[in-house]
Image (cartoon, rainbow, N blue to C red; front, side, top):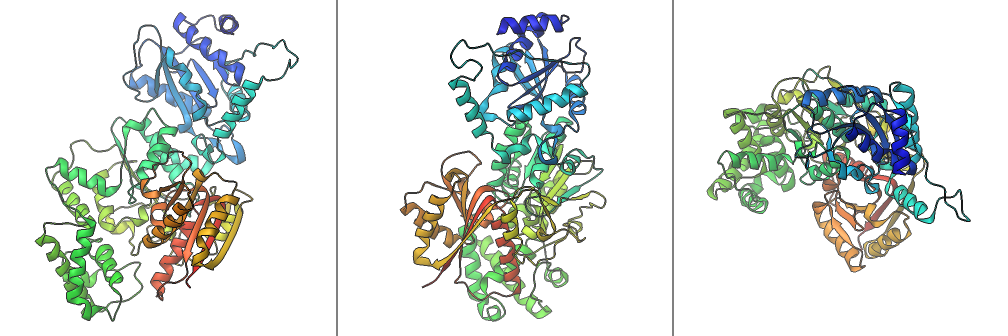
Length: 633
């Protein structure tokens, strides 16, 4: 096979040097098993010597004895992106510009590569990495489709292929059993919902590569691909900058899940991007500046409980204790209110109950007692962590700023968190991207981006097509009355889930209602009857106490589980279990939602919050949604 490939290469591209000919011969042999190779007979500086299309993706290949300088690499990346721009994919998608990989193969005595910079850097011995089936993004039909379109576009390249040797056996003309098995394994590993690694829809592609003169935001209902676009944009920006980049969000575990996704999308750039939640970033930043901040959630709750004992009689007839805890977290401390006078005039967006001046005085007294209790023990809460980091950042800005900051699920970050991010990103084009959807807010309270001094006029995008949920799942989710004001994160009219277009037909919905004593059996039946593997299934509840109940039921049935608190995006055979707060930003092929009907009477604000949480839970499911309601008694 290698001999035939070498002969063909010598005939069609005689001007190649020995190292390049050797590397391309190794690549050409892979066309016998389905890959495609386009070779430039006369190499040109700043352009790929070949384009490889394989199951793992599209690669613009450079060959040499050293890694080119960044300017030359950047030129090669730009040439490759332009050459592949607009290549059609399935269902109206296009090949994402950021999904065209740059692969630098070092020949001769170059030694092991030390860095990747703008692309993959491989030795000749590492070339098989380009063909790993456990990292497949394309099936054979897609490989041929992309390569066929490249042939029409790249007139300076020739399409070279070798055929597999004929088998002298009774099954001549057919694939051998080993080859069939290998292809079936590859197909099984190529999950349809991972097509976003290579293909985007045209509007998503445009947003991913657009140039913004200042802060920008992407909004849109659940399932419209906001995070997908953000990750592709992160790669786009990384290719066009030299400094570090930051991807952050409110949820503790979500950045690590997205880091795993980004590692599949852009393995050559993953070390350039810091993936962390906002509070973890603030803690490490303060520690690096010599400030150890003691945050213990349980101790903070004790401090608040002690304050509540003192002020309970004046406030409990207005609202319950949870309401006032949220008022302090999301309004007073979340907005950085520093005095009673400021609190009296502070807008309380997202809070339905109106408070007069006298009631605000009572709340302020509760807040002051809570703060004293924290101070007496040298403690801080998570809001303090953000406030201290913001003050330190303003006192002494970092000497080296991030090239770009991308914020996911921004609707759940407090106003003080937004101010911190604004300060962290600094001024300049393409430095700050905010991604979120007000209809998916699972915590009370609210703000507008302008409240944080983040102007996005003319730099806002709204995605309107749901690509995640199949039609029946989407229809079920659309029935929830998430009646909070749906805006574009800055007060202008936005798009709600009921207004989106569906890109996927089909899906399956099942509902169950019964006594709580039968819930365990119902869950076991649903899991046993599902065609979706356990590893791609999640059980979602709404409160921590409900999580403990469901976890106990599933464990008693011997079902392997992994809490979403510990989920990092890796594939395994365990059912994922967690609250809707931990499920945000994730999706699964099948989702079982468990709701307990017995709950206290809700006011308007609580009903709106519950509706948003139900919508989030339902839209985590791609293909199959089971909705269970357990009744007390």
